[in-house]
Length: 289
Image (cartoon, rainbow, N blue to C red; front, top):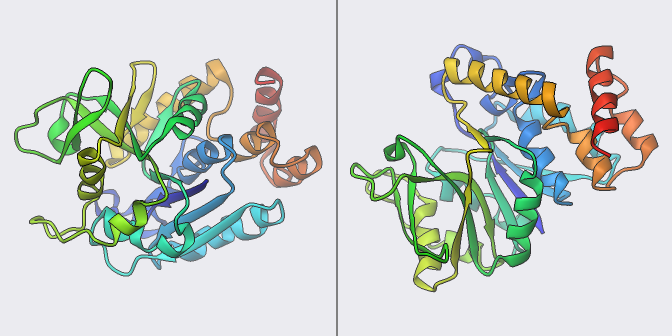
């Protein structure tokens, strides 16, 4: 199983912040946004991960991860998307990395805050027969890919940002794909909106009755990070959650819990963190055993 995280968006709505660093590197409370997606991958034992980014962000990612994680056997490969032409186009850059293997796809600016998210993803991986989409009920579905499903959670249709949504169930940007996905991605045609959209890939699985939806309930906070106010709100939610439950999105903790690193490697990874953050890690380690 491999992982792909899409991070190449220019995030113009967050300028001037994103004139300094990429959106998925912006801090959410006490760690970069990218840590939340990576930690979810690590919690499921996924150590081969493709980051699709833009050329501006590439050196930041390399500085953050190349030495830190490579020494622990974590394989992160970078693919630079030359032009923003939609999610299917971004995913296509990682096709050589994924090959015909199953993979988890995550839009990097999505943050999930809940206990047991790793268990839900592991279950989806175990039972996936083609495509599994994580979705959540929202009040403004016209902003998202909207999903319709039957009583057994088989997806019957998905429409990208419809003007008149037929349901309130929105795709969250977290997917589990089977190994034949990349061949489908390569066949996607440009949409009327001028983009290569993953909706076409999803609906190809729908037509074969191989697409399921996994609905996140109200215990899960699926956080939007597209505006200044939503970034602040996201940080507040993470802070409140961590005060009650310990750290979330901590890549070192997830690597240790998944037994992907040993205690010595764990200590080395956190050695240059602040005393405050290291203490939070140790406190979380005690509560999450």
